[in-house]
Length: 277
Ligand code: NDP
Image 1 (cartoon, rainbow, N blue to C red):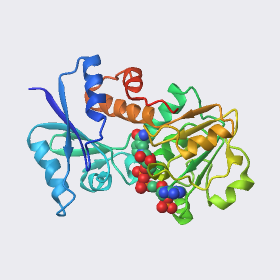
Image 2: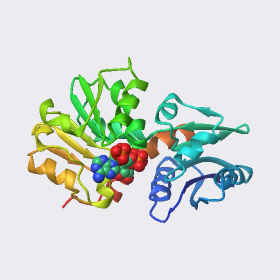
Image 3: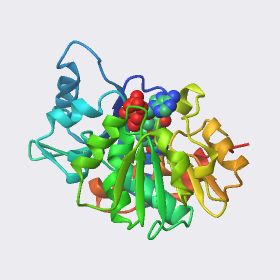
Image 4: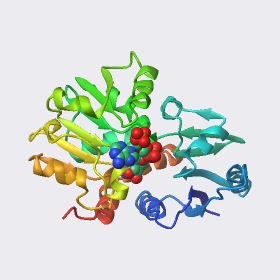
């Protein structure tokens, strides 16, 4: 029987993970089956029961998507530092009766920016909008990339400050409010890690933060030119991208972690890319 993997979320109909992992398995000749599971949101404990039933059925690993990343965190026996800091889990491995948990969102994002877009972050000024799960997952991998300075901004500024305080000493990280941005000059890379684009909204970011020689990255994907990307383009930003590459790269990290073989990602990215215009 093929080794069993799945992605769990609710809703789950939109997921691209079975397609991505199917392409990876084909390319690397791995014998596995990867399905999508709509996890139960209630009663309390039903999510954990679903995961345990999957393990009892022989499941080897799972990706976790909204709204279960925190519940997956809570039920894990072991967590990576990245998952600890993010307070959220997007991949699990089941080994010897234990649940080992990871968060590859941030590392997938860094890989997409540095490798696929060819924009190394070392020595750059980086601005991250948002302090939710995706931003939290990205902070350590971003700081590890060696930016000159990293600024995190959030509507609820206390959330951004608490996050910066949690990783004090790990790199040049500063938290501030949107109102402070006007005075902060240009950033080489601006990342929209808010969920504003999911409802067609624009975070209150001034165009003065963008640098024409720099890059703007939108974590949401498949939404074409979001208000954030439009603002960046109008400011003349050279590289603009949405989160499809991040999605595929985090999947590749999980695949490598589970199977010990790294798939190439270009085919899946090309397959899933929705042109911005
Ligand atoms: P969360 O719900 O955890 O966090 C949402 C964040 O967005 C908060 O910081 C919130 O600020 C902010 N926000 C929401 N609306 C607005 C607004 N109108 N203006 C300014 N800020 C706003 O979401 P996630 O971190 O999980 O997801 C964020 C985005 O990343 C989503 O678009 C999601 O689809 C995308 N994503 C993409 C992935 C990929 O693989 N490409 C993977 C994971 C996420 P406040 O705290 O003040 O409310």
